[in-house]
Image (cartoon, rainbow, N blue to C red; front, side):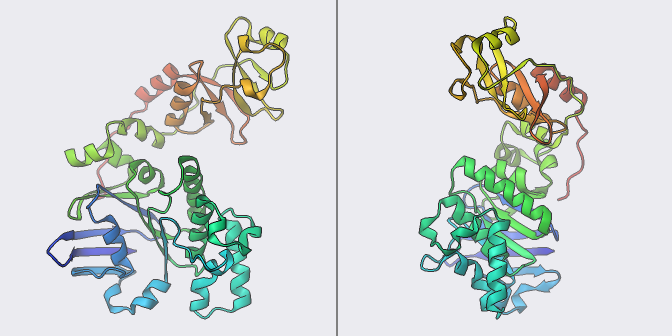
Length: 370
């Protein structure tokens, strides 16, 4: 557990970046710091590994005051991931990952073997090990940064906007991979972001900070969205927080519709027969996985992939109400595509049926954690 007790940081010139911060980051959980520019998110994070020294107050890790520890030893026991990965440009990817274990005196052969394993763990091709950072994409570099932070198997990881420098698609992939890794490893993580959607997706608890580094609210994502403590938190979380909150409500057995389907490669005649006068029909691949909707009148000969409408999202059977509603709202037909755990199509759902379930399932407001 990481604990801040009345921690302040005042820089020369009198600017207070952090003002009396008190909170706990539980062991094995992800605590996310969010807030506007100037709220002390990064300063608070960097005081944990003493890259910035607190002006007053104490920070403890598992009951040990970090101020009493040797700074270099403290940092070697904490994984640290930043924007743009912060890799050494003159070292290969493998050597970058091996850096901290080698500094700690680990056997070179064992460290090399573990570094290769970690590259696979974070979803990188082992063939990239001999390349240099400039030869990798931004998303690949961020994965290397995570692998390097994990190399010494630290119990604590600090992550300062690690995914903000990549495009939205890669960012979502990195977030999903990060959650998968955390589910396996159970690290104590403090994560800084300016993006409330990222905070809600990744955090077990979220600390919203005000300008000047004071705590506005510490809560689970569900309670933060449902019951912001004041106008500042409500404005920061955003006006669509009710919709975001649906991501924490599991969809019950929704009334799924039997949907006529075709396969890519089917003839125009087959499409018209299946559609039975409807303007759109759903296309599946050979394994029964949704590929997109197709407008029947657009197919003159056979259905090829260039004619597929791919704008609609796909909800999961037993997934969240938000995913089911989004699938319906983003579909050109108003019917959301639902797939099973293997990605195979099981039916469609209408937005009004999801909304009816939302009305029946509104949970009571719970008390906060801080």
